[in-house]
Length: 158
Image: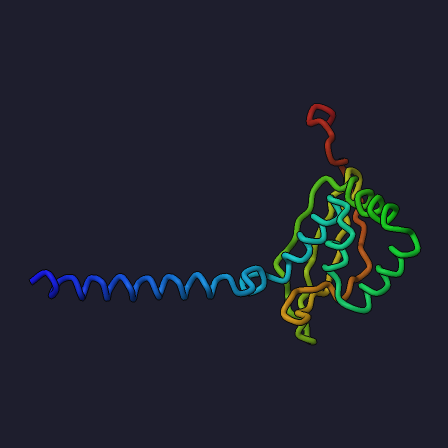
């Protein structure tokens, strides 16, 4: 009588275990890329700048931009380039990254606004999928917009 109940229970546990194992194995295959969105590369770029992570910064770009940046880093030296990355992000008070839009070439346009104390800059990043990973493959010239009330102004002063 016990074997009649035990066999189906063991079989059920084995099948459920196999399904869970398969799901876990499947979720470990390129987890960041399978679920990532094109705009996440902008946040990776910002994080690399804050840390002064030269290699992390370079990984964000596709060729030919990456090649030009590598040449610039080589000319400046890693320490100067690391310092440069930290300095370009330091004055930024806030960042807004908007939902990407697909362009006619199949790439994504990711718009980011960088808030400084006296202005806002709107930057458009062209993001493409390069060998299964999101990369910045183009950057449009940023547009600076002056603000009427500087960031950080006390409310009493208005």
